[in-house]
Length: 332
Image (tube, rainbow, N blue to C red; front, side, top):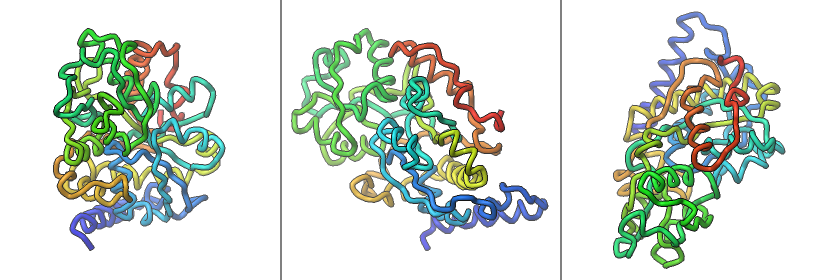
């Protein structure tokens, strides 16, 4: 057993022991006992934003909670929403912007059950080749920039920073290219720049000779809430104990990810190829922060989520929207 898995195991044993000592008999003390659906299909974007999930997955926390989690890599949350609405995925994790858009368009009826990440310095950026003629943001006018999905969180962050620096986002052509193949596109000349989050950014810096043009963690989007985990409301009502078990294991993963860099590095190496990173790249990663809650499933920061809606309204002309429609009543 590796050192980091030993730390995960020790944390889990301590948590269970404390719960038993307190005489707890609720699902939070022994979530596996009442899980209605132990086998779960979970689609998550394999980015650093999801580090807490990967700690729980590869550290055995879901397994210890009686859950068998099958992980499917998602290009973006937008690409898995339709499948989740049809029951193909039990739980998905990705950027809030796409989830909020789907809720507003009635493409899905979702609860945000947990927060995944809040952006940290250098964790999301616009990257160019080291020898590019684009040396500042004004140089992107009329150029093509790669993005993993249209009008999503990366677009929102880029639009905010472009506008802050006097560049009209509409003058930049954004083209959708999935991770991780996007990283090679600036080198091939297919695009002038790419919007890359970690770990793809550090991987591209190491392998493709790209350099950061701008850090998106600034201005209106400094420390911006990026990603979370959602279920359909129908699923939450049908499998409440399964959700509680998943949530408890996830929050333990979040706690570890937020306090142990070595564990985050390890899980980013453990993700299946081609999404994993080398030991050298893992050591270079810039980290997000990973919010942790000790409340029930759905205990999320409403003010943080309202901030996402506000910036969406500012930069992508998003209509009026009440984030309460995505919050679980039991967590209020």
